Image (cartoon, rainbow, N blue to C red):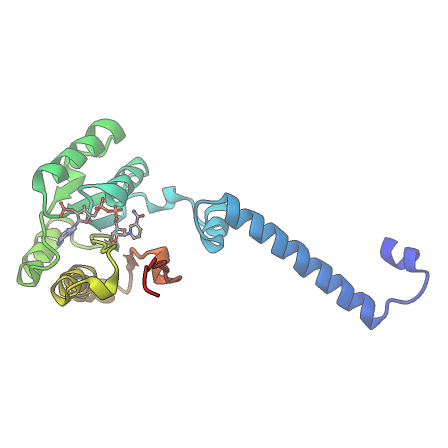
Length: 215
Ligand SMILES: NC(=O)c1ccc[n+]([C@@H]2O[C@H](COP(=O)([O-])OP(=O)(O)OC[C@H]3O[C@@H](n4cnc5c(N)ncnc54)[C@H](OP(=O)(O)O)[C@@H]3O)[C@@H](O)[C@H]2O)c1
């Protein structure tokens, strides 16, 4: 109304366009500030603020691969806090046991609600036995977090095909292999989530600057 009174004339098409432009500009500036100040992308920030709280995951059975260190380890602690049942997998059994110990001692997870299943993502023929062990224990997997992975930071052109193959085996084929075996149990219950850990490099390519003395 104020806008109409200030104008002292009927709102015209150009005024509406101007208002829409102003709204979009404001949203763009807010989004830009959120992206710069936030530690994740915009969608995740909005979900964090307005989505379900982590406590809605209480009692869910979550299988985290690559939980012997880094992001997987931290995720195990965060999910322990909200009362999830956990399966921890990676190659280093002693590190998995350490993480399991922390979940029990620090975050109060019952010893019976957390299972260590050592697993090598590239030993595809061992995956079925691992899934069987998990199903025998918990009867279901609500969330599979495909987090185990390795990165390769050398210049790709100078990287041998053998290294490419190893990276693809862990990051792609290992994920496909395990997911293929877990998915039928989710389909049977018509319920379940699969989380695939990715990288900002999966969205935006990185560039390298080459310095040369030639010419
Ligand atoms: N941190 C980052 O900035 C970043 C950026 C982009 C993407 N990511 C991705 O996020 C995920 C976690 O990264 P992170 O930073 O937490 O790395 P991290 O600390 O090195 O953790 C990697 C995890 O994967 C496990 N792993 C590696 N190879 C495996 C294999 N063959 N079989 C089973 N487990 C294996 C490792 O355990 P074991 O050695 O005990 O097997 C470890 O628990 C990875 O997929 C990574 O590519 C991370």
